[in-house]
Image (cartoon, rainbow, N blue to C red; front, side, top):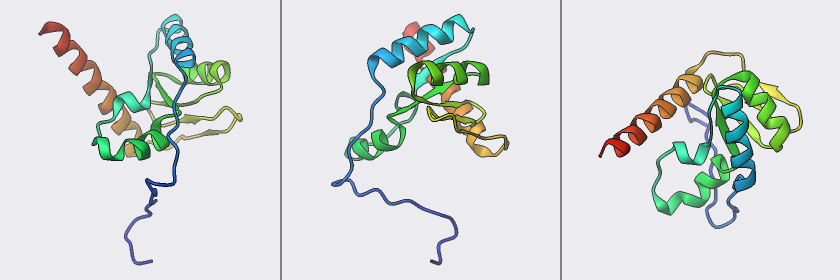
Length: 126
């Protein structure tokens, strides 16, 4: 087509949301703490309108955002859950690893994580 960049259209009436199990989130958090890292479900780090919840859960619901490559790899292996580092490297349960480029994805994830931490700190002070 004539679009300037690639797009994906998600039919809201035909998709099923994906979610990381609470057991996987708990295990990832424990492992991350033991590795001096952090791990959060990606869905908790993005803002969205409720009307597109199914699409957001379809895209981000089965992913954990982890601070650090070693932690991301270990957590992916242990929980069989896709992990993404703040630099944008992706670890798949199948063993596939993609990344290496320092494009805007890593800086965007890093900014989202910083914003979430700052928001939580602000809530605690209120």
